[in-house]
Image (cartoon, rainbow, N blue to C red):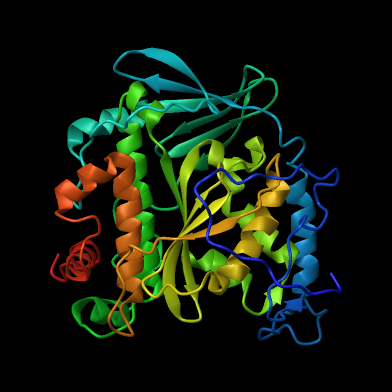
Length: 402
């Protein structure tokens, strides 16, 4: 860690990217992961400010707390090569159908109803509550996942814990909290006005809404549809923001925050990609919004950036992803960047938040329809900024008289 080198970054060819063999020490530094060309601080020691009434008490060491948390999280990682099976339960057919999680099917995804801002019909409520998936390890039930909850079972098949699938529901928690984001008067003003940057409250709430809509569609679908669907998992902007990738290299901090996001998946060693294949990160880097989609099968990072430039711009993002996924995957990924150059570019200095939402809209719509169907439905591959503004206003601005 004493020598800093530049990450070699290139735009990927179409063939599969090879991965190296896993290290014998899963917690060793990321193999062949070079450092960014610009120096960043390592393991910066962060301490809490003393709140009122804390003067004179021992100072809290943030780095120490992170290290202690990380030790506990790592206890759940025993053998990343374990295979997990999934069984889908359909209340209409009253039967289970097996599916291997790692099975790859080259089947065209059937056309479904696209994501709508309207509430889902009442006739779907029964299937949402009744449909569920079971995850098995060596033919033993370890997880049961439904729309609103996740049940965790011990090695003897006894119910151990029940967790919420989401910290929020399809309805607003309150007038000022929508899709797990706190809204202020400034946020409502931005949605009603033009020429203003979108806040993380707006972008992240839309990301949460899309993920919730994906879950609703999934659990209202029949078994055969669910078997083909690549479910969506979106990391909101707070993860990468809190990692401070532009100012420091703190592996323990990055991993601890990563495991906290995935606490629902401890029993499958945080291998959430066995359940969710459409993995998206919302990024706010240097006050600029863009989205990164991960293809873990091919070790590719797709960049949807309305101000895309040279691949070197994303070198620290590569470092972050290689650091966190090298610890939980059976093969260590060597990520490469794929810039989506057909993604529309912004013509002003303040629209990047809207374009990030456009990318999120496209990446989630693609899971319900083929690319051609998306283009036919919308009249174009990506919706316009004006359409995105309308969607956000209708979704997030409440009637003050209601």
